[in-house]
Length: 239
Length: 294
Ligand SMILES: Nc1ncnc2c1ncn2[C@@H]1O[C@H](COP(=O)(O)OP(=O)(O)OP(=O)(O)O)[C@@H](O)[C@H]1O
Ligand SMILES: [Mg+2]
Image (cartoon, rainbow over all chains, first blue to last red; front, top):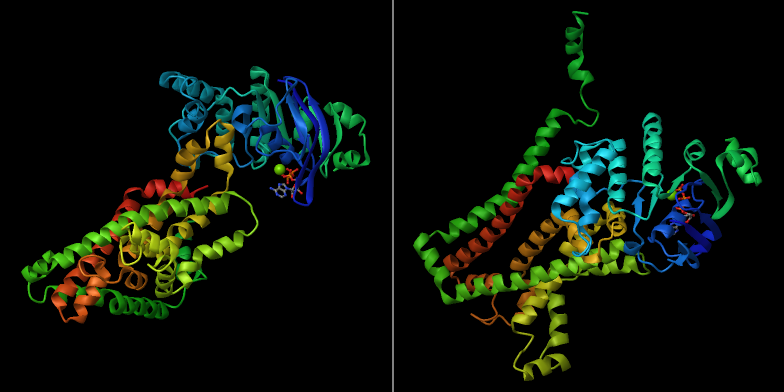
């Protein structure tokens, strides 16, 4: 699905989290929102997911206005920074949640839900953890379960907020490859937030560099590296 | 290598003593103080109540409970708790939800207001209810004309009990809900769940232990409330006299077996509440522990 962000701005009371920003994300792209803390990455991602409404501007999905679409209707697979797994449900129930929450006419039968959950557990390469609770998983496993849960609803896009933020370097590398693979097999338009430039450069087709609520540069990783558009980008990449 | 264990062992008493540990003498004194305190303030009175109730034998005690005045008091107290506690549970959840899931102006003021019943004397609260809903006020007068008086009748007893016990549920829930944040609810939203579904499948399971605890405390307090109910009920024997009120009246008339038998029932109800809580905690200890890990 193609995503168009048209002059979106967001104010929280007196603070402007986003000055009008515009961004066009081609269908099937893997995009990184890269920037320092407080630059508005999460805010932009939450606006895409429908968890926050913009103060002004429009969001278009496949050229239709989605600005006022509710979270539920957006069908965006969202992976939260702290994963936000349902702590009182097993991994199986976590992944099945979105399917079970569908209106009865569209809800798959019990056996079909089980089949799909099993398939997702295989996709994240954790076939045997369905009966466990989130508290019994490692950080990396939780992250993958959160990804499976988001994929279960057959989302139109995938949004991830610092998906590897809380993990150690080795697990991050592994999961990066995993995300790339899942993106390539599903073909989902994917936007992820990171403040790690290596992660952005290695993983993304398109990198969006943000600072203080503004987009500094949009481009392919190698182009941004070769030709930083602003002094900020140059300095940020140098670190 | 072979002597390592012995060297370790010889060091143990000093090296392994946690920095927070007080001297043994102090510890014993502290524990003794707590036990004496509990014995004097909790166990002794509890035993005394039962001893007094049974002082003329179990038959007399049971007979006194079969007295219509006593049965009516027990029934009234149970009715009041059965109405006031569920309503306060609902209001408490709503208040805690509102305070923790939304940002708005005057939040601090609202939290203070929720605590108001803790700081206002129950007698004053009762008087306020009489002044608001009494027979010579607009609402109260109208209700009397409809043959449904509020004051000196069941409605005011329920209102008074609700006012006094309002903070319990909300107070238990607010810190738990603040700690848990909104992330799980937001995740459920992105998965397409409706508001009610989220409430019943995500929010409620996450707060169920705090809720249970709040409800049990609320219940214990609702059954035991004296001051506010004494003012609004009019203390009509066999009609508006709850258990605590009836106990006081019987006691003032030197009917000590009757008074203490009823008091023993009230104490038993409280003990039952606590036992229930302990049993549930014990039964669900695993889940409780799992829920507390992030
Ligand atoms: N709910 C909110 N209320 C008030 N201000 C907010 C809120 N959410 C974000 N902000 C502000 O908006 C700005 C952008 O925040 P945002 O969370 O989008 O940054 P970020 O780029 O995701 O940062 P980080 O890398 O630290 O997660 C910050 O100045 C932040 O303080
Ligand atoms: Mg962020």
